[in-house]
Amino acid sequence: MTKARLLTVLAVLAIVVVVALGFAESRRGAPAAPLKVLSATQVAARVAGAGEPYAALHAQSSQLLPGGLSALRERIAALHGHPIVINKWASWCEPCKEDFPLFQHASTNLARSVAFIGIASNGSARSDSEALLARYPLPYPSYWDPSGRAGAGLTGSAFLPVTMFINPQGGTYVRQGAYPSLAKLEADVRRYAEG
Image (cartoon, rainbow, N blue to C red; front, side, top):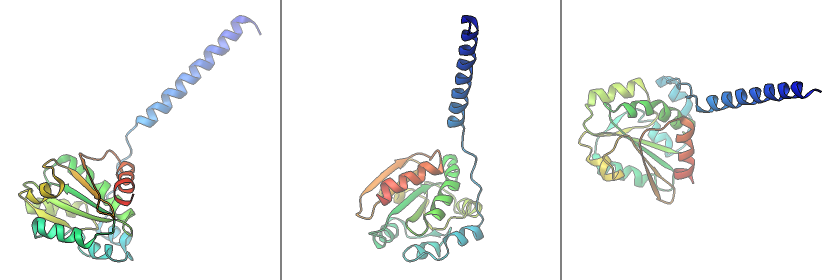
């Protein structure tokens, strides 16, 4: 093989490698396809057959419950020994709305092993909160907290959205901000709630 031909072959191989690496990098950085929003019927079908204490949460699917911080703490105490995920959201909060499909899928995927609870917080209008829950049915209730005091008292944060994880031993971890993907949310559930 002549030197010129060898250089041509090496140049072509270098171009192929650069293109392949560029394609792989662009695929890795590509945003995930949006999750399909599940209907209330689909959510109910996915969580059917879950045992207690999860079934009690599923029976209150997408409800706004009263009682504030004391009711929320009472519910958490009743769930002691089980992994718990608490999502604090507001109907006017755009990052919170973006999180709803992720929490819908994570909570249905993990319906038999993790307790999910919501907190509708920080100035949400009840009708707006109910409309958001109708648009994104969840297999768990949210506690109505329009003042934001219950959510801040529990999570230690006035920020939105906030996700609090409680492991079976009672250890907690609080994460502020929206989730970039279902995979990241479920990884955090495994690490902080189940782990």
